[in-house]
Each structure stands twice: as structure tokens, then as C-alpha cells.
Length: 437
Image (tube, rainbow, N blue to C red; front, side, top):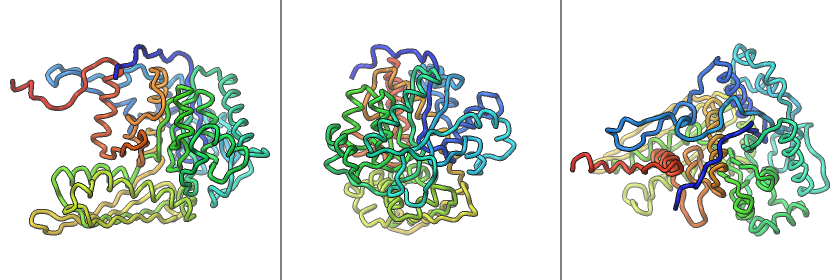
């Protein structure tokens, strides 16, 4: 595969639209503005702080990623979004309680100017939430057309030259792929008939992709992970990626599990439980939404450890995941893991992990990296599923029939090699034999 013939420069403003203006998106918006004002550092962002090795280890070439590839700059980002509540971004951030009042006060005026557009929402898909700031239409197709109008109005009024949409809304109830998801034509007919398999997040995906807008899915919903949207992404030359931001407990699994496998250590069981008290925790109290999240979280170990190849080590592993809504904890999620491993001669050992993390603090830099990389991909003429961005997701999207790669270290290598490929640099395999010839 040849590298892109030319990557268009990032001229003009870059619009970022977030369906959902809750804890994650407002933490992202506030953080970007604090960094722009020189009041904070973009910790956790690969695009802002990461370097990339070029050539041999002896060459000493390791530029910042943002100096190596033509990414959009933070100063050019403009924010917008939709939400079922009327709170502006400052009010929403204050309600979420992620950032302290002192930090919020520094960007209060800026955040207060970001007001949510009316959301396309249906309580059948997120049963624990409801709000007044909701669009009305006779069917889902008309709702999707209204979202397209919002996108165009945002493009014109904010004078942005490019737009990326990143789903930061709640986890919807579990939806299985159906025939109505198979082609763009069937998808449109299903929207017009209010088919129950067409979830609100899919309306945003359809509206964005058919407007030429790249789309990232931060929740475990199907959303863009269906043939209809994927075909539209190719036709409209739009990059898409998902799904489900890899933040707390699953991030730890994709760090630890590859280590066990690399050293051929066996796994009897992995029990994971979480407590969290934000809106995400409240939504996941509903069994339908939890089912969607559970499917995403459970798949990780199967794909990393490959029990079909290593039945002696992983063929009988027991993997359990629990999530409990506990309001006093707010956005500061706590994840406990009990890991039962075994080593030489089958002797058992245990590992305990207690990760007291801040969900939105971990998610915000993921949003930043995804929107900047998707914008880069679109300017490079890359379209459809962007598997190289698997690094950021619990349940990465892949080409049909291709199993996802969950190992964080392989994902990181894939991402950086994609950037090298885009810029015409040699890919790095870490063979290193040339140093000893």
C-alpha cells in the first residue's frame, strides 16, 4: 500500500462536535482552553507530548509527533455539541465535579459561551436519563436531517474549514446488528419507519458521515460499527473509528495481559469490579446499557490471550466484570481486580490491582488525540475504518472478518508505524540485526 500522495495542510479552524456535553466533553473542552492559555499541561495526550523514533536507534531522530505530522493546532479548535440538558459547558462542568472550581473559574467565560444544541434522544435507549433539550420530529430520518442542519449551521456560523464529531454521550442499550444496518438504503428506510434497531447515536453517525464529517465513537454502542455507515464512510471519503474509550480498568488489562502472555504465565481467573458515581455509572445501572458495556469489556482478554492457541494456559480462565453505581464517588472511579495466575509447574500466584482513577481525566486526552488524528487522516485521503487508532478503544473496529488487536503495545506500534508510513519514513520492526552485522 502506497503512502498518501499528499497530505493537505490544516488550514483554517477545526470544529469539534460532541454529542453529549457531560463530564468527558466538558473536561476535554476546559482542558484544551487551559492549555491554550498556558495554565495547564496536556498530560496524557500523545499528539501533544509524544515523540516518535525515526530511522535507526543510532540516528538520534525522535521528534515530537506534532512536529512530525501536520496536525491541527490547539489554537484553531472550535467547540460545539448537543445535550439533553440546557446547561452551558461551564454549568455542565461544574455539575460534573471533575475539575476543581479554581480551574473552572479560569475558563468560565469561555465555557459559558458553549451552549448545547437540542439533542436527538430517546429514553428507550438510555433508560436512566431524560431531559428537556430534545429535538422533535415525526420520525428518526427527520431527526437525522435536523442534525445535518446543525452541522451545517455550525460550519457557517463558526467559520470552520473542517469538522470532526466525537460521541461523548451515554452508553445505549444493547443492540445487535440487523438487516436494517446492512446497506445505506435499508438504513434510511429504517429511520423513516422508526425501526427500534436504529439508536440515536446512529443518527449522529449518519448525519456526520453524509455531511463529510469524520466520526469517533467513544461509547460501546454499535453506532458506526455497522455495514451501512461503513459503506457511507467510503463513499463520502470520511474516516471513522471506535468504539468505547479505553480509560481505567480495561487500560490496565491491556497493559498486564500482554505481559502474562509474553512470559507464558497461565491465568485461572480475572475478577473485575468497579464503583463510580457519575452519569455514566447511573446509566449503567440499567441492565440493557450494562450489557452493551459488558460485551465491550469482556472481549479484551479473549483476544489478547488467545485461549484457542494456548488451551493449557488460558482455556479455562474465568473472567467476570461488575459495575456498581455509587454516587458519593462521583467521577473518581475505583476499579478492583483480583487476578489468579499460575507459573512454573502450575504453582498458583495472585495479583491485586486497586486503581483509583478519574474517568474523565483519562478520557479527555483520548478525545483530543482522536479528533486531531481523524482530521489528519481525512486530509491524507484515508477513509473508512481507521484501525490504527485501536490504541484508544476497548473494542476496536476492524475490517469484516478480521479479529481486533487489543495488546496496547502492538496498538502503539501500529499507530506510530502508520504515522511513519504517511510521511514516507521507514517502518520500525525492532529487529535490530543490522547493529550486529
